[in-house]
Amino acid sequence: MHELVFFDMTRWEITPRYRAGMTNYRAENADEDSLRKIKRGYYVEWRVADKHKMTFFDRMDLFVDTVDTDAPKILAGDAVRDGLSQIARRPFRLKPYFDPGVWGGQWMKRVCGLDPEYPIRFDFLDAVGGQNLVNAVTVVNEDEHVREEHTGLHELEFIETRRLWIEDEVTIDNGGSVNQLNLVEGERALVESLDGSFEPYKVHYAETFIVPAAVKGYRLVNPTGERIGVIRAYVRKPQA
Image (cartoon, rainbow, N blue to C red; front, side, top):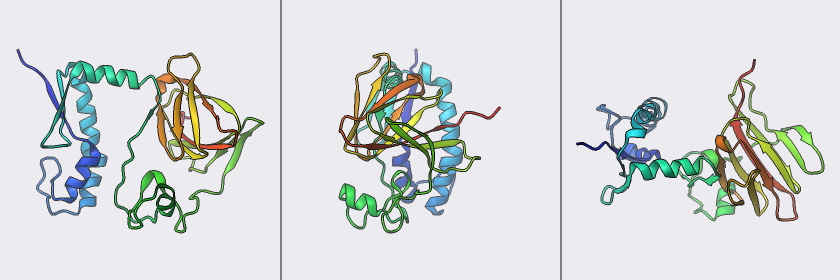
């Protein structure tokens, strides 16, 4: 008898370890520029590891979270698989990940009360003075319920981004793709199931949340009485 044990470490933990001198997989590059090590992990090692992980995921007996070296956390493989199965059928939030960068982040300093020296990158980009990064948009749909804008990604990009200004509610077909959203204007919003498969899910201003592809369709509801804004990103369908 034997058990298959998977030891996991998150990417947000690996990244600072690269900066502290950890090497890439089977490499002797402790002194290499940390950005190069991160790129190597992001574009090569982590992609390969993700595919390798899936080859034995269904057979995994134990899952070990190694982020805290002194206090690893262990879960039964069945518990991990059951948890992921539940997550895949309902909206969920992402844990914010802050990482040093060269962008200003004036908006984040003001809204979230971060230290003036706290850097910002990726999800919460803003212009140098704290203004919106994208202002030139194309209106693709507008009625008394919602104004939908295309925010300008190039046609060769595989990600589509839309901004929705919602007066009351709007029903969305996710097109068979995972949807990533952020409440960019307004105090709060609700994500509702079309078939009652999950309870209404509340999100607040500046929170990023995921609606898995398995949900298929969902409803965004504005409970505030004032217009709210939501950014929605998803994978474009291949052109015929």
